[in-house]
Length: 333
Image (cartoon, rainbow, N blue to C red; front, side, top):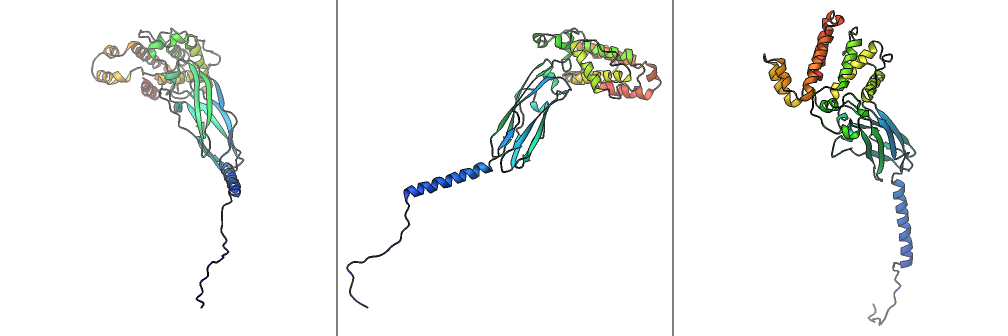
């Protein structure tokens, strides 16, 4: 081994260095590719309309509108509607029904979503005076943007769901013939709703031969016609309501009227007191004295109505039917 030490030396070294222009070009290319992949995987959902007009909406008459939702993307698209909540009644969940509320769509698939507005007993006390429908539904797309669907329409005024005190003050003019300012007032006077008298009078006049009254359902089309006559103060069409089916429909409408009252004929706040009186030998008039305003008048009237109906020959000959009616009707009070 030589002991000579070199004074200088040359080495060939290969190094990897970043060339800034090339680096920026490749970086931009990679970002564009990642953006493209992300966009391709993001749901691309479309709906046929974002506005649904339900027109005029009546009590117990479902109104349905539909839209189509489509997946125009290349991946799976999942959707669901946000829960419908309101700070003040009525709660949209009580009258807006969506089918389906959620689901998934493959690439190129589409689906029809049905929206139904149905005003039932839970809702009618809040909309019986009429008013616009103004709701917005939020459709969530998983990993995608939210979509907003507006609902419009108009709740028609109805005598169903109106407090007895208020309805008694209208004098049978028909709630749709009353000015909006009048429908919002509260009345503490006596009297009795004319609508209730019209229904019971029809039953007493035409139902004497109907053995299954209050025990069988009527015809929905006839019930709808009866409600329309009550709301507008029009005369009943005797030809349309002719026969036993017309009587059954009137009886069903009467029960629906009592069911829809926001405060029962015997209000909850005095129910315990009424039950205590009924268990003693105290007079019936003392029982009536604890009921507010028209509630006492309506109770007396309905008891008189039942008494007259139970004198029908057809019920006297059928004690079982009479017993069932006697058990069934008071639950509405």
